[in-house]
Image (cartoon, rainbow, N blue to C red; front, side):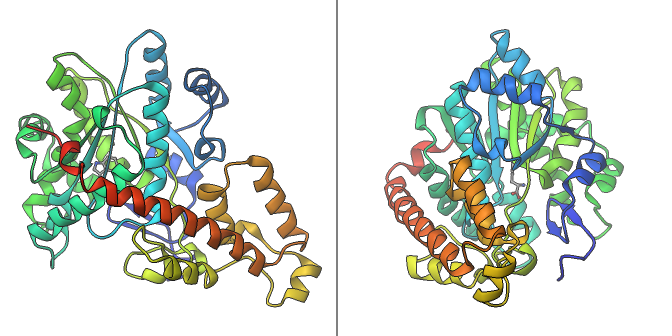
Length: 374
Ligand code: TRP
């Protein structure tokens, strides 16, 4: 696949060169304005670098959530993961941002594991395999640092009792023709997948149902999940709930050429369970924006814009804006060459993995306590 390939962004496939401005127009989301960022900063105390640097780039009703908060009305956070394999660094970014929101606003989080969706989607999946990944991936979620008292992980398969009474109410308002148009379902699509959007909608309203109050939900998620929210937002008022709000992220590019990342090509992404040696090797094989030789690099400089190493520094491993700028300028001017940059990144990745893996091990003792009790 080349990056010139036509852009495809659906919940099940992301490929080609992604034009985020175009997605805002196509999906009808709103760009994040300066006013919204200022308001977020005022209430959160700080602006997370993932929003400062535009990794989170558009929204729906995020301004409304902030206005309601200003009036003393709290919201709940809702995000999730399709547990189809091990977690890689790209998956962590929305979770890191969600943790910032949870801490800043002191709010509850529902985290949905769509083990049903992944079972229905993949021909070679058993239910046991999907649920196995739910538990495995939950360790990574917990390792991000979400507080136990304020966080509930939901396995669709294990916790269906809590979701089902909401899902049927949603489903009754959604015609087949709508989901066929929104998700591209075909005659041959199994009926589980056709019902599934109602299951992914359910956590939006779970807090309202459990507390008997109308509590708005804010969903931090990658932009590919947008079709689910479009359908859910249409139904929400019919059920007497707030429309769920979203704050959408971009995708972290993989380490391969053209920024491709795919779990089916393990050398293009760093898994949270990779050994430090394996992760280091992936960094050293990463695609950069450098010149073919060190000499040319010193003379002409590199191109951080297309460099996967730079991206990882920008979105994961350098919180200091000044240092990011310096890295950019040093690359452009040829003062730093790719080998040096890769060494810096490799050290940071190894340090992160070492700590994450420790927290992940510890999570095994408490993982059950994080799941929703129904
Ligand atoms: N369908 C999502 C996936 O495959 C998982 C998911 C469920 C999700 N609920 C969510 C992701 C809410 C973001 C926000 O990854």
